[in-house]
Structure formats: structure tokens, C-alpha cells
Length: 228
Image (tube, rainbow, N blue to C red; front, top):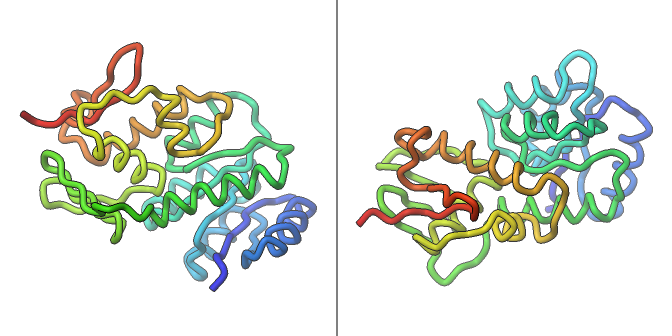
């Protein structure tokens, strides 16, 4: 079965370009012209990934994310013409996994799609079950429990947590985490990783303002602290 990608974009020319290219790459493509239509379609077709424009009529990309993230953790890549870093950070804070800035190259976009989908599928590991402190991460089932309570993570948050848990107390530089998540660099690296860490802490930490598990090593990066 081909993966289904939902394109939510108000420009007909961009939708047509994405439809043609992604279909050639073997994907099934659904389309919506604004966020409201996209939300309805996403609920019906349950896509494997969403390409989401930010600036749209009726319901913009931010509003779509606020509504959709309450329901599902489907990976989302933002398509944005905005160049301000804060605009992109807002989308990541709302639960987007990645973004590309218009105009973008189709090969780069497909590479990002594949990278995000790999995160969602998980990697085959010799030990698919990770247990550290009160957190249990099951790679095969793509499931995380914190103190016996299941939490819903986006593919990026899941892969970030798995990377940190696999080597407790190891300090990862931000660029190392980005390479693990993306496979290649992009602009705004440090801020992007920080946003994903902040989102993850909000879901797994008893007190996100005083992290117990995902600790900052100032001037370096992050580590997953094993309780002694």
C-alpha cells in the first residue's frame, strides 16, 4: 500500500506541482485548499503525513495544528514562505515535525518526507524496548509510558526520546541530535532542537520547568539523566 500524503495548500499551482511529483514518487496524494477543508479530510482519510502551508484563508496552518494535534500525532511538515525564525518556531511548538521554506526543491522535500516517515515507523533495533527511570519506550509498538501512563508523541519527539534513552547520561550536542533526526543540516539548528526538547519535556516530565529526565548541559546540549 502506498503511503498517503495530505497536501493542505491554498495555491492551486503548488498543489498541482506537489501532486504530480509525489505521485511519480509512488505516494497517494490527497489535497485541500485551506485548513478547514484539510482538517475534515485528514479526519476522513487518516494520512501518513501532512504537508501544511501556514498562510491560508478560512483556517491557517497554526489553527490547523492546534486542532489536529488534540486528535492525532500524524507527522506534519510545514510549507512556509515566512523567513522569520520565530514564525517557524511557532509551528514547531504547536507540534510540527519539520519545515521547508518556499521556494523549495522537490528532491529536498522528498528527502525530508522520507526522514520524517522513518521516524514514525521506528528503526529495527536489537533491543526494541527501552526502560530508564519511570519511562518505558517500545520501538515496535511506537508507544511510550511514563510512570504507567501512556503519552502521545509526534514521530520527532519519539525519535528524540529514543536517542537520549538509548545512552543514559551521554551528553549529545544539538547538532548530533539534529543529524539523528534529520540526516542533514538546515538553518536555525539550535533553536529547532530546543523547541522539540521543550515539547517533549511538557509531555514526559513531572515538572517541565525543573526537568528530571531530559537535562540541559549548558553550552553543550542535552542528556537523559538516569536516576541513581
